[in-house]
Length: 111
Ligand SMILES: [Zn+2]
Image (cartoon, rainbow, N blue to C red):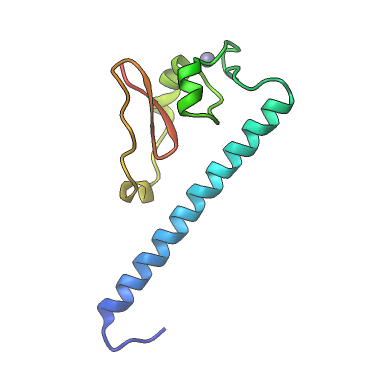
């Protein structure tokens, strides 16, 4: 691609990189939905895959494709490093204190 204004190319490159990052994020979300459907078929939907306990109903309502309970999400939270492209995506919804919340499709726990 050629343009007499180099800054225009920079904007295009930025937009394409943003699209690629968003596509990757959506593919990850789609994978989580498919996984949730598979768990439903196996009768495991709503059961925490880490501790085996029932996932809190309020949490499932908010994060319908989550596979872990709030406690396990909290315990594993520190191991998660956010990809850089998520910095440009909405900061998500904050829940009441002590409840799990969702930022860009990832589970967090506010204590
Ligand atoms: Zn758990």
